[in-house]
Amino acid sequence: MEGRPLTESELVERAKRGDVGAYERIMEAHQAIAFRTAYLIVGNAADAEEAAQDAFVKAFRALGRFRRDAPFRPWLLRIVANEARNRRRAAGRREQLALRTAAAESRPGGAAPPPEAALLDAERRGELLAAVNALRDDERLVVACRYFLDLSETETAAALGVRPGTVKSRLSRALGRLRAALEEEEARV
Amino acid sequence: MSELEQELHALGAELAFPPVPDLAADVGQRLRTRVARPSRFRLLAAAAAALVLAAAAALAVPPARSAILDFLGIGGATIERTNTQPRAPSDADLALGPRVTLVEAHRLADFPIRRPAAAARVYLDGSVPGGKVSFVWNVGGRRLLLTEFRGAQVPYVRKLVGPRTRIVEVLVDGAEGAWIVGAAHEIVWRDAHGLIRPDTRRLAGNVLLWDRGGVTFRLEGARTRGEALAIATGLRGTPRRPAV
Image (cartoon, rainbow over all chains, first blue to last red; front, side, top):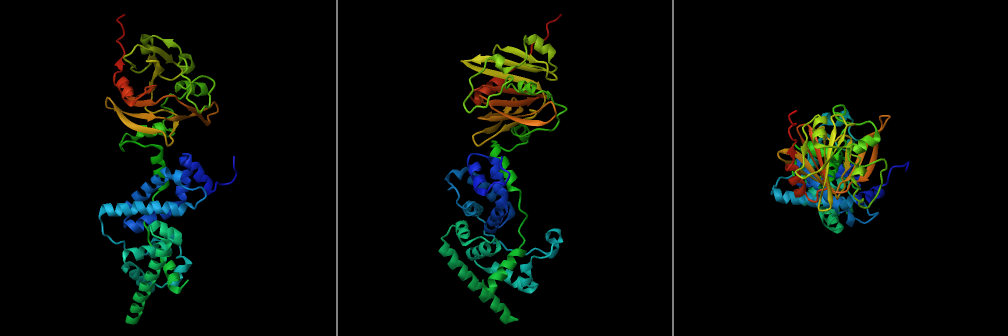
């Protein structure tokens, strides 16, 4: 009987053999990122929840194809993003996800804002958010994956179903557009 | 990282995402029980698939280990852990209690017994409150076992449902039931000290489980769901007591 918690690799091996309990622990570690990735793509919480659920079920069944010791998260996010995109296509919705910031009062337990937030005053935050929301879908998505979800370039590529090089170039274009939009704002003031 | 990128990170830290649902639990549940349709009947399917600790007092839960195992028709004093299909045991291996006549079973059990259409050997386990009645008969070399006892849920039974196990909801003459295919059963029982203990034995054959009028019925040994349902819907009420 081991005294230490199992590594993800060990949990995956067990899950491959049908151990649903082991898979539940894997899911717990990744459900937030899976849900949020789906949310960014699909635009609403209900569809995001279903897409992420379906993705987890599919991933479980596809574990046979998963290479031992490969990083699990990018592989999972690719499946999540596929589910989310399918769902978005099927829904035919064109709703654009408008990101919002959490009001200070709604922060859990009245916690202080994270230290990085000190970088932005309310005004700047508002401008930046508006600029991000004004980006085209694919550019906004790549910005969100890289900076809001902190996915790696590989993971972003897997999630978006594109090559890492495409992620780089798309990101670079997006940042350029953001800068331009923000300078325009400043110039106006 | 450029200043803009730092600002984007800062923005990310402040974004309002909807609360993350408990996907792990939902998906875990889904993987364990693939039900044909969600329905209010989930309760019995879940009872078949999940540990039921509730209503212990209301149920016939024999305190002794062998009694619990008998109760579930699992077997005698020794439990084999095996990966291969166990050889069909003789009636005696099932430890169903003493053999009785149908009339005696009807008299001694405190619930209305239903019997299979086929001629069957009858056993009664009086150690279970209310009595546990079992019918055993053969069809084409296969052995069928019908067990009935008072209780709306299968007590202290957790059927381990792996990827190869399916639970399909069915209706047995309007009563809610579950057809459990390929189930490896994990039995959880309470020992003499009141501790819950797990035990595992692969049960041969598929199981049809249903609940009607406060009595749980369990049919084991049918090859197909159709056969199981045909037997279940073909059960008859017990004969009236002969006029004395």
